[in-house]
Each structure stands twice: as C-alpha cells, then as structure tokens.
View (cartoon, rainbow, N blue to C red):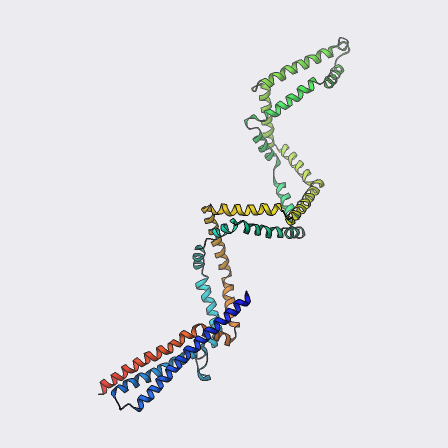
Length: 426
C-alpha cells in the first residue's frame, strides 16, 4: 500500500512538473514574440502610424513580462544567479516561513472555537453504535480483548496492583461501622414484621424440645435435683414436669394462633431495642469493631482471597484461549447490545458526543503547541532545493500566468501612453 501511494505521488509530481515547464515555455515564447514584434516595429515605424501603436504595445508587454519574470524567479532563486538583494525569497526565509506556517496553523486551524465547531459536526456516538451493532465487528473486538486478558492478568500480578487493591479495600472495610450497617440490614428484615417468622421457628423449636422424651427426662432430673427429699418421695417431679409441659404447650398454641399475642409484641420490642443498641450503643460498637478486626486479621481470609484470585485467573485464561470461549461469547453479545442500545437512545448519544468534543478539544488545545513546533521543525529540516521544488510544483504554474498578465497589462499601458504621447505632442 505504501509503495503504491509513493508511486502515485511520484506520478502526480511528474505531471505537475510537466505542466509547469509547459507554461514556462509558453510564457517565454510570448516574451520572445513581444521583443521580436517590438524590434520589427522599430525598423518599420515610418510605414504607418498603426505600427507605432503595435510597437508601443510590444515594448511595454516585453517590459512587463520581464519584470514579472524577475518577480516570479526571485521567489525561488536568484535571477541569472546574480546576488541581487531580496531575491531567492523562499530559500532565504526558510526559518521564518517555518515559524509563521506553524503559528498560522496553530492560530487558525487549531483554535479552540474552530476545533470545537468542526468536532461538533461529527456524530462520534452514531459511528460507535453502528460499529458495535455489527456482530462480526463486535466478535473481532471481543477476540482482541480476550487475547489481551492473559497479558493484563500477568501485568496485574507482576505490578503489585493486586496487593495495592487488596490494601485499599481492606482500608475501606476497616472504616465501615459494622453496628449501624447490621442495624440497617435488620431494619429492612423487620419491615412488615417479617422477623415474626423467626419467632415462629423459635416457638416450634421449644415445642419440639418439650415433646422430646430425652429432653423431658433431662428436665425431670433437673427438677428432682432442686426438690426437697419429701417432695421426691411423693414423685412431685413428675407432677411438676407434666404441669410445665402442659402449660407451655398451651401457651405455644395460643401464640401460634394469635398474631397479636403479647409475647409477639414483647419479641417486637426486644428486636427494636437490639437494633437501636446496634446503632447507638458504644459497647455494641466496640464489640462489632473488635469482631471486624479479628475477622480481617485471620490468615484464612488472606489464603482464601489468594486462592480465589488464582482460581479466577486460571479459569479466565483457560476460557479466553478456548475455541468456544464463554468470555468471548458474552463480550460479543455485550458489545452488540451496547451498540443497539446506543443507536436507540439519542440522549446518550448526545451526551457521548459532547464528551468526545470536550475531550478532543482539550487534547488538541494541550497539544497544538507541539503540533506547531513539529511543523516548524519539519519545514526547517527540509532541503532548500526540496522546499523550493515543492512550492514551485504546487503554485509555480499559477505564478507563470502572472507573466502573461504582466505582458497584457504592460501592453495596454504602453498603448495608452503612446496614445497620450501622440495626442499631446501632435
């Protein structure tokens, strides 16, 4: 591609050079014709008064053509190689041209208003949306990202970024007050008295305990140990156990059947007081902070985090290299979905375009001084012959037409002066 562009450029330069030489030849031939006509008219001036007018035209045209030839040549080189002052203007002023060109581009083409206005005409977001909406392009992008994933993970592993992130996360966790956080979670849980389900589970647990034979035997032994000897003789322990179990079963049945039972309200008050203590009690706060610090300091947590990182990295690397990669498939679907959503949301596109304009304008504003310096340095480094040839190839053809204009205007002026001379002196 680069070679074909170079060949095309050389062919274009050759065509410009041929056109320039052709116009030069025409202008020189016209000048020679004017001089020849002037000489002939001088030799045959007495033949007819008309000859005087023709000669005046040819003389002034030759002078005008020579003057404009000198002006055009003086731009690029010294006429006839003579060291005439203020000639070879472009080569002599290469440094100034370089600086002025760089400054001109910086001031007029890279000005913030001009850049912002031009960037505002472009719909970057629409182009991004169109590009991402194409499944093949999104798939190619996901493949590219998947190829980068192992290197990214390796860079994270070797750069210490993982340790840095872990430290920052730990610091942020240490700043969190656990008591109020747990209180907020419990407050959410207790909305609409959902904590009463937990109370029902506790009641069921007590009910199962009271009907369990081993539990009853253990409770009877405890009652017997507390009774005096005479009560034991009359088997008061069995009586008391039956009364306790029967009364408890009756109470449990009443609680289950009544959502507005006093015991339930008592449980509500207990939960509310506990949540309030979590938020306000210094004692609870200290206990929670101690629990949090002990948890974060446990070596098992660090080992777990390290093992999770290794497993996650190994899985991602294996999946990224697989033929049927889940990662690539999900990335492709995500990119396509983002493109389609972006295409259907003009507000987001407008915000994106505004962001692009602000970012790119700021970038251009920050770098335009460097662009100006780069252009200036490039022009300064050009070979004088190359610089002259480049400018002459691109504007020299139009400059040669100045010679034709000079001959025409000079000739007309010559005729006018000759007419004035005839009228005044006759």
